[in-house]
Length: 450
Image 1: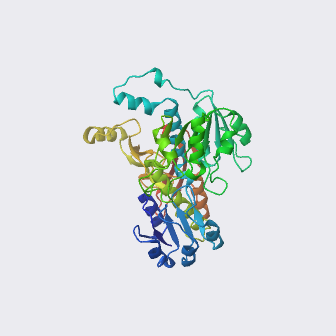
Image 2: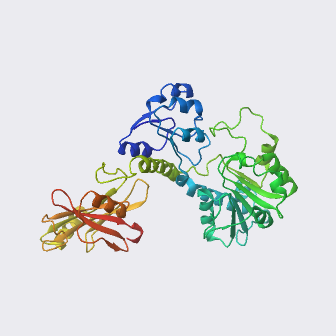
Image 3: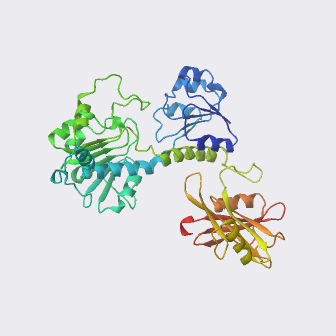
């Protein structure tokens, strides 16, 4: 497939699509009209938020099979019209949900403990302890509105605290071990903290207004890491002035533009925002809750995985081309026979400085997701049967991502397994022979156990 990238993203996205067999072209500067003039040549589009993909754009995209947004929401796309044209819509909330959960918790703890205020005062030469007496999260009741990827992530982060977590969602039966689903009324009656985790839609637009706020029975802290349009800022400020809201953690603002850049068109700020930036009980960040080093990679990889699953790995059979989903992720080990393994290990230790144990040497590295991984080097005795039925004096261990699925694919392709797969505390193992009769060890590791 021919794919046009109209926003820059982590290289893992382009590389991943290339591995799938896609051809990639980039255009980060052309206007929407200029892109529309050539979009008929492409089967895929990758965007973030540079401009909206509307009915006009979709009508010109005659060959389009998918639109991938490297982010959590699809509000910049006319989703209903795209779906009517059979275009697959892809978003990646799985990619930055952890970042959002951590950011929400970090903002709340910082506000509760007056960390920003205390830091500023110390830099000004003030040492004020009583004025910076904080609150503890333990014993509080946290209410969530919206319990999808982001809400679940925040609830999971709260497990380490002695808090009760409640959620309200328009979908039924979304509660889990981290959060009890309930009514909005119960949240309004009991919550000490209210955190917003809704997508942008008609229901969430201006959802947190005076009517909702006024029914809370006690003062609460508000967290919004979702969309700025969910909170009516004038009503928020009014509630803070009246003591209905004790403080606010706002990563998003209703004044934002669709591109999340150039927040204001002129230098005159809305009065409500002037109040927020002057308040010691408000923390602000520029829509970066899901904007981490790690999430940039995970967002890109999530889009690749979804394209791969939908277009390259559905209804796969032995007659189709082999799946190009990530299987082998690295070399897990290099093993070979030698007359005297002990002497060989000692030679490598003495002359090449290898850190040797009774098995050989372990080399540690980071995979493309920056997770710790290892490769084992091991000399085996000549009489070892571990390489059988191969008659060769060496064997290679390949690290794989999903051994169970890989074994299904291999079996469908007519490749026989050697013996039965085995499971140990440090991973799953299986064995096959390649075309040349070399024994291949397949390993889905648990590196944390090594």
